[in-house]
Each structure stands twice: as structure tokens, then as C-alpha cells.
Length: 357
Ligand code: SAH
Ligand code: SF4
Image (tube, rainbow, N blue to C red; front, side, top):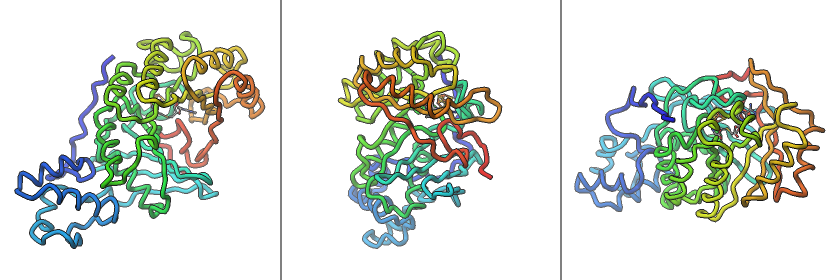
């Protein structure tokens, strides 16, 4: 299967965005101007650690360099993100307008323990899983690394960077492994210890099952966590729910996941969206438990979040509990994902240009 996508070049500024440059690449650009590389380290810590996005205020840089920075890289961020909060203030939906007018949606979720930032990797998605609002949009375009990093900055700025520790999950719009280069570049930038210094163990990439890209990600050894959107335990059903299964069926996908987990030394998450009367029977639970046992894994159950126009039903809380209980003795770790942000169309699978009221 190919993933030919329109390029994201419309509306690009003259100098590249700072947020898409690794420290090495920024150092290279400085090098071309005869500026020492360590100046890139200083600019990184100004921007990511001291939150200073105005080059003229970077007081330990020579005035001549400060004046040159706008020609080297563009420090501006998407202006005025729209932010919507749930009534309990724990979940926020962000809508960023990009230079070409495309809109990207991201979500921050707070629990007592931590803040999790759910970021998008594409505008829309080509893979058309049958229960997902993003899939209904079709693929508009890939995001660039800087547009991925900008989502994190926008959410961090909004929360005034009060959380010392936060996690990032690539579970927003789009299939991250269909935009692997930009996602990996963004991960490297977020990871930089002169930047946000975000440990790879705090980052999880969720995929609907692009097997060659899972193998490629393993080779890159970025150490990010992997979540697999399984959602069905037979190929017959998964072919219908997650069409990419026709190309890479369950056995191949779980093989790749097992190898990935082995290489990176982390347990794989198996995500399982529960659709009432479709994949929530006891026989499904038994097969899922078997898959989960076969690889070091955690199972994350996601009760279906409604998407207008789609026919699926969320199972009752009792049915969700019954499914989880059937798994507990056999599967090593099972969690039920809280529904966060349903009132804002911000829960899993609901990011698709639906406006909060
Ligand atoms: N594209 C990636 C990340 C997307 S969203 C992927 O597919 O893995 C995160 C999770 O939400 C995925 O497991 C996705 O399959 C699931 N999901 C999609 N639509 C949903 C819906 N309406 N209700 C509940 N979960 C949904
Ligand atoms: Fe794309 Fe993921 Fe939605 Fe499937 S669930 S359509 S892969 S965003």
C-alpha cells in the first residue's frame, strides 16, 4: 500500500521554522554563517527552557547574531490557538491553524498524577478505520516536524509549563507511522536535553498496524513506546473495522509488535475499542487474552466514543466491566481508558473538525 500525500509546502515562510530544526541542524545553519555551534545550544535553551521566543531578548548572544536569527530560522508559533476546556477543567482541546489554513487538533488530559498531551501527526487520515472521525475526513496532508513540536509548545504554554513531567501520545489525528520521518524528527527535537528534554519513555506512538514502519521504527531505536490499535481478534472482523488489516493481518502485526518490544525493551500496549455487540463478546475477550499473553503487553480498553453518522454503539458500563474481568486473570495488565473530552468532541477517535458547542 502506498501513502502518497499532498506536500505541506503551501504558505511556507522564507526561513525554516525553528521548531523543525534539531540542534545539529541549527548548528549547521549557524556554521554556514561562521557562527560557532555552541550558539545553537544557547538558542535552544532560550526557546525551550526559558520560553523566550524573541531573538532580540536573548541577552547572552552578541547583538549581531541576535539580528541574524530571523534570517536563519523563524521563531513564530501558530497564532492564537483556540482552546476549549471541559467543565471539570481536566481536559482541553486545542485547535491550531497552520500557515496554509489547515487545522490541527490536539488534546491535553490531566489526571492527579500527570499531564498527557495527545498530538496529531497528520491532518485527517487515509486509513479509514470504520469508527474514527479522523478517518472520515480522508487525508489532507502530513504534518511537518515543526507542526508536531508546535502542538506540544502550544499546550505547554497554555498550562504555563507547570507540570514537571508530562507524557506525549501520538494518538491525535492521523497515523503517525504513515508520517514516520516527521514524527521521528519531532521526537528527536522534543528529546534534546538542551530543549524540552523529554525522555523517550514518556512518548508513545499508536499505530493501526503499518508493519514495515514498525520494523523501521525498531531499527531507529528511539525507544518510544508502541501502542497497537488491535480492535478485533479475527482477521475477518479486523478487515472490516481496520481496513489496513487486509494488507498486514493480525499475525504479522503481532509479530512485528513482539520484535519491536524486544528491541526496545518495553511492553507493547494493545488498544481495543469496544463496540457494543460487535467485538465485546466473551470469545473476543478470550482470544484477546491469548494475544496479550503471547507478547509482553498491556491491554487498554476504549469504550467507543460516538462519532456523528456512524452506526456503532458504546457497550454498557456493565458490558465493559464484564469484558475486562474476563481478561484480568489471563492478560497481564488491563486498563479501561476513561472517556475524556467527549463533551468537546475531543475523546479518542473524535478529532475530525467537529466543533465544541
Ligand atoms: N492513528 C493512530 C492513533 C489514533 S487514535 C491509530 O489508529 O492507532 C487513538 C486510538 O483511538 C486508536 O486506537 C484508535 O483506533 C481509537 N479510536 C478511533 N476512533 C475511536 C472511537 N470512535 N472511539 C474509541 N476509540 C477510537
Ligand atoms: Fe487513522 Fe487512527 Fe483514525 Fe484509523 S483510528 S482512521 S489510523 S486516525
